[in-house]
Length: 86
Length: 206
Image 1 (tube, each protein chain N blue to C red):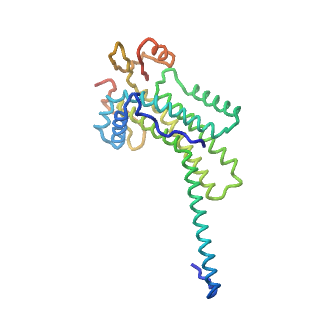
Image 2 (image 1 turned 135 degrees about the horizontal axis):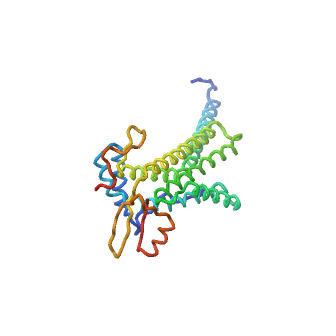
Image 3 (image 1 turned 90 degrees about the vertical axis):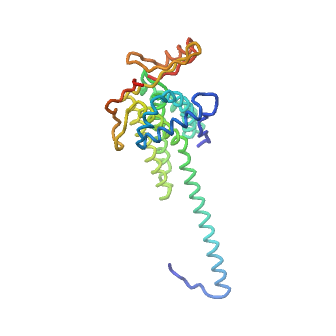
């Protein structure tokens, strides 16, 4: 941090006031940027949601049919698993 | 982008009920975590899959419309062209034996493909006027879109390779009969549609 001497008395008060205003403006601008970025990313939400649900459904179908995925690798049918049984 | 519905209505009179849906996905979560009993318990519940896939298919239609509208705005010719291209992609990826789940996965591939192009197109349009922060945001969007697209292709390929036999449910004379497709049984969309006329309801996924 760099401290800069701005004077004393009335001049110092005006300088402090200007700094406060600047900080408030910067804070508002940062909030606006954050909120615009969040809105930008939220545009993808419906498709992301659809993909997530679809992926879960497909995994459910594979798991229910006796397939297992080992360490995020290939899906393989376990020995002795047969979809037609039971 | 236009405001669109993000929630699939599972509370209506359609089947499965919310409880069946929650139970199924609860089991999927546990099975994904390595719970073998949950994985085994999923087997008798596979009849939920085609029905949920159909509902998600409706949801996919809403998402497709929103993305196309966001890309084209008021340009009707462009909207028609993109809709035609999506239809052509769907046709290219579809197979006669596809059931609701496969159709949903095909739809997902086409939508994620469209989103990759949308993300890249938007970034290219705004490239010169973006600061570092926004440029990063656009690039992250492209990355996410590409990941979704690749995952969609991978899952469709996996399901096709595994040829997962989902139950076929036929209601005949007030009785619900469930069976599993035999290798010789091929059901395409046309035959399902005609079957709907003669049988009370048919939900099929071969």
